[in-house]
Structures are given as C-alpha cells and as structure tokens.
Length: 544
Image 1 (cartoon, helix red, strand yellow):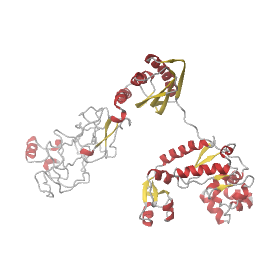
Image 2: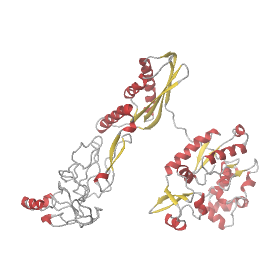
Image 3: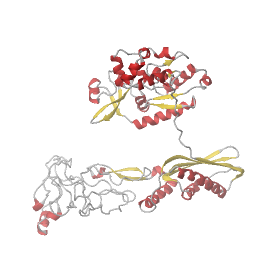
Image 4: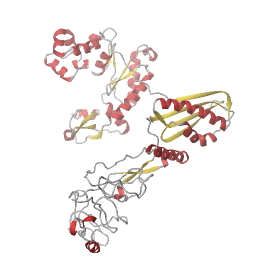
C-alpha cells in the first residue's frame, strides 16, 4: 500500500481544506513544500518547491508546518490496523506499508476482495491509497507507485515490463542515466546485457531487478509490537473485604513493578480491573504526576477507589495494567532527584482527590512585557528546564534571573562569575519558587514597577564596565522611556497617567557615569561619583 499524499491527508482529517493545501518544512534557510493535496497538485505545485515560489504560483494556497513525528505515529497506527488482514505487516518508507497476505486472502473472499476492502476502509478514513499486488515485494512496490493493480500469478515479468525504470527502487541519478541511454522501461533493462550494466551502474541495479522478478529473496519484516505491562490474579474463591483486595493489589504491584524495573520504564497511568462473579467488571484508573515503579508508593493511591468498590457477591479476578509508561532510567539517590520525587508524590496525592487536570504551575515565557512573561501550564508536564532564557547574550560579568525550580520565592538569582547578586523576579513564582521572565530593561510609564529593587537580565549595549560587575536596578516609582532601543520594543509616544495620549514621553532616565542622558532606563549604581550626586539625581526624577 502506498499513500501518495499521506502527510497532507493526515492533517486534512483534522483540519479539512477545500482549496489548495500544502505542508511546509524548513530546509537550511528556506521553507519548501513537504506534501500537497490534490488541489495543490492541480495548481502546478510540486514537492520540494520553495514556499515563496509556491505562493507566487497559487495565492490561495493554505500552508501548515509539517510534523514528521506525527506522520510516523500515524503510519504506525495504520500498521497496527492492517494486522486485521494478515499477521505480517511492515513499514515501507515514510508513506507506505507492505503486507504478506500468503494464506490470508481466502478469509475475505480472495485477493481482489481483500484489496477492495482495504481501499474502501482507507477512503472512508480520509486517505488516498494505491495498492499493488504481486508475487514479490519489489513487484508490488512497482505496481503501487505506478497506478496500482495486480499482477497475475506467473505473469510478473510481463506486468513489470511496461513500467518506468524508477519502479525498480533505484537512485534518481541512476534513473536519469538509464533514460539517457534509452533504457526507459523495465523491459528495456531486462533485455539489455547484464555485464555492461554491472560495469557502469554497479551490481545494485541488477540486484533490484532480480528482487522485483523474484530471483533474489526479499522478506517482509513486521514491526515489533510494544510490550504490554499487565498482570492478572485469578482467585479460587471470591473475595469482598477491602483488606483482601489490598493484599491482592500488593501482589500484582510487586510483579508489575519488577517488569517495569527490568525495562527501565515507569508507569504514568494505571488501571485496576476487578471482575465480579456475575461477570461485571469494575475499572479503577489512576494517573500519576511522574513515572513511578515503587509498589509501596503506588498502593496507597488506590485506597480511595478500593474502599468505594461494590463487590456484590464477590470478586474472583484482579487485573492491573500500566496503560501509559515512560522511560525511567536509574538516577542518583538524594539531592535534586529526591526533592523532585517528593514534589511529584505531592502532586499525585492531590490529583487523586481533585484530578491532575486541575493542578497547574507557572512556566516562563519569552516576552519583554512582565505581565506576559509567564504562562500557566499543567503540573504533569514534567519539570521546567534549568535555563529558559539561553537565547539572551551571555556577556561576562552579567547574571540572568533564574527560572530553576529550586529557587525559593523571592530569592536571589544565581551568580555569574564575578557578578553581584540580583534581586528576585517581578512576577508570581510557580510551585517550588519557579521564577518567570525577568523584567525588561525598559518599561513604559503605564506599567507599574514593583516596589524595591527589580532585577533585569538584559545586558547593556554599551558592554560591561571596566571595574566591578554591574547591577541593573529600577526605581520604585514609575519609569519613563527615554527613547527607543533594540532591546526594548517600546514606542516613543505612550499614554501616560496625567499626560495627553500621544504626547512625547519626558526624557527623565539617566544612564552611565555622572548622570549622562542615555538610551537605557537603567543605571549602574556603582558608577555614581558620590552619594550626594545620586540623591540629587533621584530627587530630580531620574532613576534611583
């Protein structure tokens, strides 16, 4: 099976588009077309065309970014779906599947009926597919990529002879060279002398021809099935006491966690199924904030669900399955790992009562506006990175406000080599003291600055001073912008409290040594010549 518009069909199943549609992918410094739908191909677009050129050809083109990872997941899902037809299903490239239907076609009424059933189901699912059927894997690939069809038994060579030479799965440069020699069909290659072809194009061309004709074997390698982490306990007599259910649950957890530990994975979602004697099944799902494989920590989390179970006339079978697992390699005991485990355990305990979807944390976000410097995300998305602002220039002697989850609320940021300590962030910290985006070095008069010294992680364009390490601080009052600066996208005319809208902002900020007027709304406190000069500047309305 070959899906000629696989990536585009996958996206259009979620976002239907009636006109020309394409997926783009960045290659080098330019965007190019990754996949197209039928309308875009009819408009003259082709895969690999630069996106700017495609927009010039078709102004109504709708473009979305490609997601190869999602394409691979969908291809794997289709591979598992195709197991309904035969047990040997493999992946062919990035847009195809290969099936070995030997001994399976008669279950659906023959080969033609099987192919028609596959094509009909895929068409209803929104996928365009071409199916090739032949005695060999290479022959089926050639038929699928040249319009589809079935080769009769024993007539494979006659069916492949009129097909173009690219259907032999050869490199594009070999295809071009063969066409220049006049060998444009597979039948032309079959009738040519083998020795000159081998000397000019190598043995690979002849091997591909022999695989397509069945002279060389080519097996179908089915994809490996993911392991299922599930254990079951069948009881000779039904039970109904909570203590008996907990004892059986501990037995299942010991066996399940031993298998998880052997594969270095942890359970993120569990499901305990209790089967009663009247064949009714009760499911007790459990979601965890982080991967876990410790039976002593998982068992108490099922307590609320087990206590509310209606056992009826008794329960005779228990089944525990790890529905979702994640990698969990061994880590060093103690330190940050121990603290992270305690936080995850707390989130899990709270989540069993109110639901994990109702627990959120703050995460930093790139923005020059303090109010937009953080975002609220789910607490189960994992720990925040150690640095979220690595894109800022790393100037020697300058420190950045930290967003580490081990920073206490209102604490100081880590020091850079030779840098003075910075004050805390200007937005509310998340769980564990997670700081948000540091305040920009320029702030409009309409935005109040929190009282006290506020740290800024934006270095001065003038470069570090000659002696000592600077500290950027703002005044406790409102700051006015002197003029625009590349590091601060604030216009010259801003609405000010008490000033008409659009009036030029008073230039009251000072920067550098001696109180010179400059382009920054910050100053170096160790650059003032005397405390008297500093007090005079503050009284005059400058930065202080």
